[in-house]
Length: 232
Image (cartoon, rainbow, N blue to C red; front, side, top):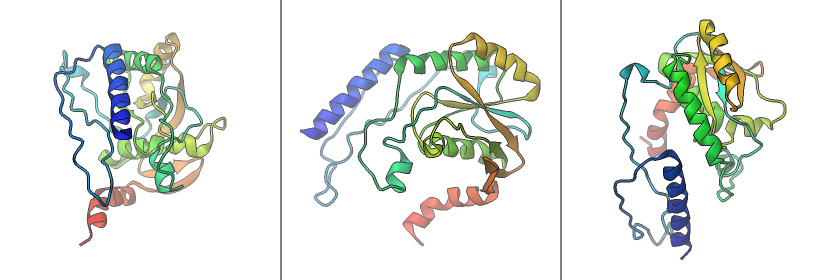
């Protein structure tokens, strides 16, 4: 019964989000029989496949940092929340927790601002903060072009929550220096929080003036993790 209850809750939440964003659902399929006697029931987590239509291919945006010297901004509100994060599960061994912080109205408003930033060519890259939190988002944006980052955390937020919390509604963007004033002007007209994190660098990962390695080492670990898990 608890599996059905969790699944119903997930579907209701998806329904609210789809209604808010006017996103149609064209079909679905579900099975509650994919469990083993050893592992117990499967997690009742829907997997979503989504297609979008681009009206203008010039507005196509990617997640990768483009060049050293670009400014890195965090759009959205940071909160003291590590609930249901990879960090909480892997480091603290806590596998059950409340859902991460989420505000549907703020999420919608944030995405409207992001679309305007892209439309006006004010951002070089856009990447949502999701699995692994902000630090993983930064690493994923740095790796494609072999770049790095130098950022400062927010003293008002616990460092682990700031870097590894998975509270929703946050997006990392990079901004070219010549577009910074226009970026700030547009953001200032919105009611969405935004914070300057730091800059894109040539390859080293720095947080609060502390070195956390080089992009080549991080990329090596990232690209070989499945091989390590499965063994030789």
